[in-house]
Image (cartoon, rainbow, N blue to C red; front, side, top):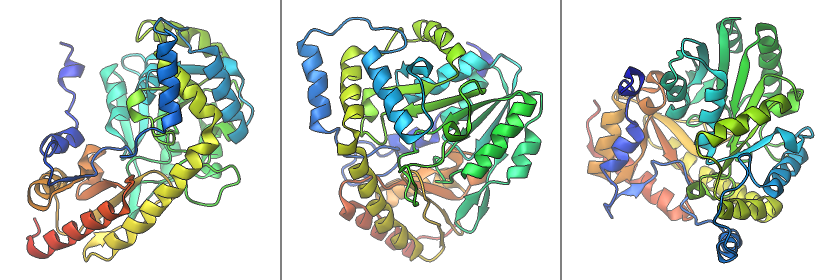
Length: 388
C-alpha cells in the first residue's frame, strides 16, 4: 500500500466509540449527529421514489431538480448562485475529498486551520500534499483565530487553504470581516480556499439571514473558492450520505468527470428525499436549530458549574468543547469516562495535538434529560477520580 495510507492515524473518535458501542449503560455523545430520526415526509419521498422504480444511475452532477433547489436555497441565504455552480455529492465527506482531489497535487502546500475534524487534515495527506496547520488559540474556554498569523502562513507557495467555520469541534466562527481579509489575501497569493460550511445553519448568534457568515457573501463567482455543504446536520440526514459543492462555473464540468471516477452519482431515491427537504426547509431547519440552541443552553451551564471545567458556549455548531484541569491525556480520559462513568465523549486530540486535555460533547439530543444525566455522571466521576 501507499506509505501515505499506511501512515494515516485511525480515528480516535472511533477508537473511543468502539469501546462503548453496544453497552446499554453508556450515554453516547461521541459522534457528530443528532439522535433524532429524519422527518417522516423526507423518508416518504425516498420510499415513493423507490416505488416508482427510480433505481438507476443519475447525472454525475446530480438531478437537475435537486441542483435547482440547492441553487435557490443558497441564493436565499447568500449572493445569487447559479445552478451551473452546483454539484451533488455522496455526502459532505465526499464533497470535501472531491474538492481536494480537484485542486491538490502531491507535494503541494496546504494550510489548514486547526483543531478541526480529522478528515480535513487527512485528505490532503492521502494525496501526498505538504500540510501545515495554523492552530486557533484557546483563551479560557474559547478558541480564537490570530488572523495575521493565518495571513502570514498563506504565501504564493500555498495551493489550498482549508477552513471549517462554524468549526467542529470548537464552535469557533469566522466573522464576515475575517472572511473578506482572507479572501483578499488569497487573491493576491493565488491560493484556493476550501470552506467547509456544513454547520452554517447551526448558528445561534443574531443574524440577518439565519446563518453564520459565509465566504459566498464576500466572493465573486470566479474566485478560487469551493464551498462544501451537507444535508446531514441541519436536515437530520446523516445516514443518507448526501452533500453538495458550490464552485466557480468553469470548474463544474470537470467536477462531473471526477464524480464519475469516484462514485458515478448519488442514489436517485436519496436525491428525491433531499429535494423535498430543501423545498420544505422551513419545516425542518428552524426547528432543528431552535432545539439545538436549547440543548446547548441546557448543557453548557451544567458543565460550567463543574469545578475545573473551562468552557465558553459557542455561537455555532453542535458541540460543547471543554477542558478539564488536571487531565493531560484526552484519549485516555475519554476511554476512562466510557469505562468508569458511562459517558461517551470525543477526545480533543482527535482534532489536533494542541487540543490535548480537551473533550468534545455532541449536545444534539432529542431528550434534554440525557444531557442532564450525562453532566451529573461527569460531576460525580470527577468527585471520586484522581487527576492524571
